[in-house]
Image (tube, rainbow, N blue to C red; front, side):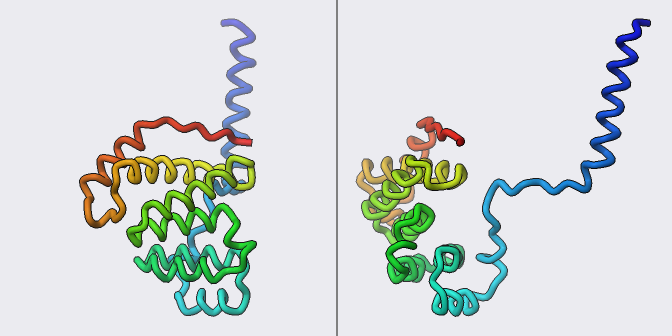
Length: 175
C-alpha cells in the first residue's frame, strides 16, 4: 500500500477525533434574532417595558408580539407612537408593513416595505432582514399590481400574487 494513503487516513481520523472532542463544547452562532421575548412573555410585561423605555428593542418586540397574537392594529399604534428614530429603523418599517397589510392597507404596506428595503440596500440592516424585506416588497408589489387592497376580501388573488412574487429571483448580497 502507498505510504501517503496512511498519512491521509491518519489526518482524516485526527480531524474526526478533534471534531468529536471539541465540537460539543462549541455553540452555534445565531442566524436569526431570538424570538423568545415575543412568544413567552406576557403582553402586559412587554407593554410596561415599552411604556417605561421605548427603545428599538422594546418597540419591535411589542409590535412583533402583537402581530403574533393577531392584533395588527395594536402593532401599528405601538409603532406609530414610538420615537421618530425608532420608526426610521428598517426592522420597525418591516413590522409596520406587516401590520398594515394585515389591516387591509396594501398600498401603505408597500410604501413601508419600500422604506425598509431602501434602508437595507444601504447596508443598515442584517442579512436576514434584508432578505425578508426584499421578499416582502416583491409580494406586496404583486398584490398592489393585482389591485388587491384587502387580503381578506380576495384570498385567491393574494395567492396568485404570492405565486408571481415567488417566481421572481432576488439576490441579497452578504457583507
